[in-house]
Length: 259
Image (cartoon, rainbow, N blue to C red; front, side, top):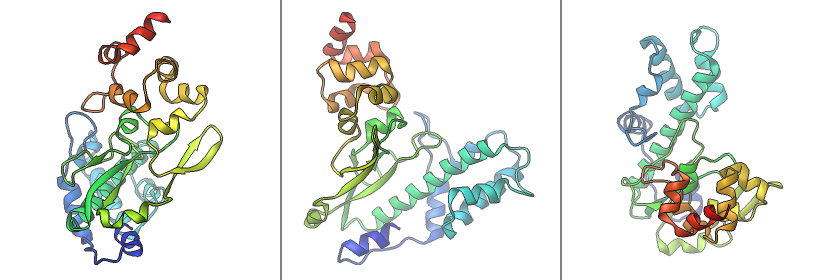
């Protein structure tokens, strides 16, 4: 979809990586689900080899054929499938694996068209269920092949988008992105970061996303959405404790003393 979408909007010749090339990159590239990356097959720890093979082939063929996640799960877990593995467990692995494949495919597109695509941007889901690591990475831009990639955790919903050469900046005018706030689905400016979106939501929604204490800090300590993003996680995307946040920003410490 990347090349088709780009070609529709940008008058240039884009290179499309072959499916086998994408799959090879997927199986070679580690998943960054923690500070210690794991390989693709490690998602299926404890499974029998036949079960691993069935899921891998199901994901591969489903991706190439453009199947939905639900359809792939049905094919893998259905009659004659992984009888000893719960559908929920298999669905988690499949969703995570598909996210890995999709984002590696995007990276292949970016790398092979780097005369037009200069960087890539992390795109997180704007709602109250987004994880701390994905909240912190939303809208961050990275050098192709050098930054983190989704999935950041099992069932990760984040993706990436290409950053096009400045000569095509006019394409960004009026661009929107989807969000689901307190009033339901909506469209917000494409430049809106996760924490800017959250700042526009009522207190109960902020507390649902961050937890009650962090929600109050977010609203009442005087720090900006960007400052909150910076002090929320460490370099690996792990959520920091309240004590660690207070050590990074005195305003958090002062607010906690007042509570």
